[in-house]
Amino acid sequence: MSSITPHAFRLKPGRDLKQEIQKFVTEKQIKAGWVSTYVGSLTNYTIRFANQPQGSNGCGHFEIVSLTGTVSVNGSHLHISISDNTGKTIGGHLMDRCIVYTTAEIVLLSSEDFEFTREKDGSTEWKELQVK
Image 1 (tube, rainbow, N blue to C red):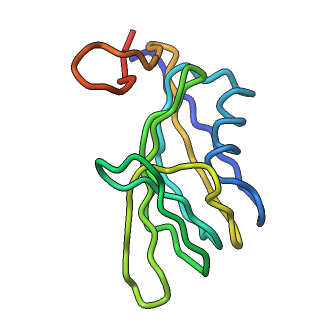
Image 2: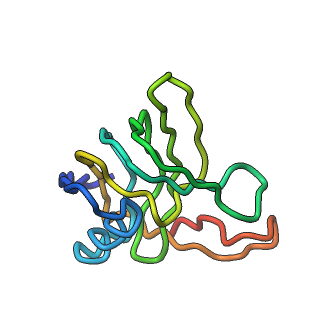
Image 3: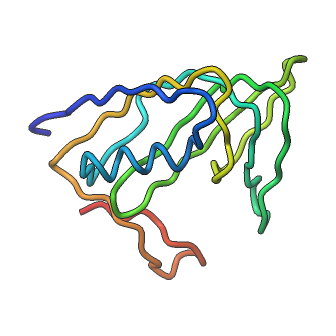
């Protein structure tokens, strides 16, 4: 691998987490990236749980305990885990309408050695990661 480029940014309250990450990826023209670290909180969430066709949502105050995945101008795939004020934790596929509460501090890494795309390859019904 020839080089890895770090990208760090913060989202302020009221921003849509998924949309803003994708906006940043598009602005920086990241073709192959991944989440390095993340901390933050949400007031609203929409998460699609495993093998479910629709997202589930809720509102309140939630700590984001993890965010992981791959990002690309060709499509991103992110998973999130959040906990409520009792520590109950849920997680799944990050969807639109996850609204930042106090902050979202995001560090992405990217490499120009690869290009991530999302294509149906016949192994599942979904567009899956293709590494070029």
